[in-house]
Length: 150
Image (cartoon, rainbow, N blue to C red):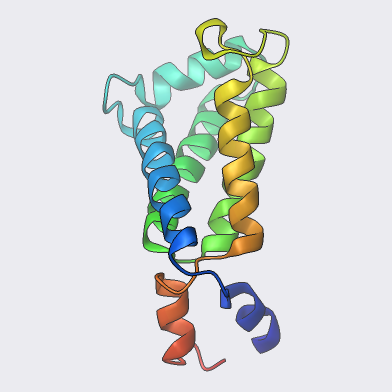
């Protein structure tokens, strides 16, 4: 178990991971806050859940809760670099579902609700799975200071 935790936290990246993590985390956290809390013009769990059910993602409320939580809490985790690989993996899966269930078939570009935006987020979060949090992350701090005993 210690080896798995160590492999999950260790990352050789430097500032490049920070440059990728922070804006992607901000974007995801903002979108998640729309779904969960109706912030920034969002519809909250009820409204988002109704929309998700209307596009076939049922039960809508649960799907809105899962997607919103992945985006908000995963986004905050990416900003902090805490559990980076896990947060990135959860969000990559969320973006894959969004891409395949909502955006595919609507073209490429954002103006037609195409795959462009979901694909960009899927690519960035997938890269972070492999890159990890990097030197400027809480993952690095936890590992360096042996806070988990690994």
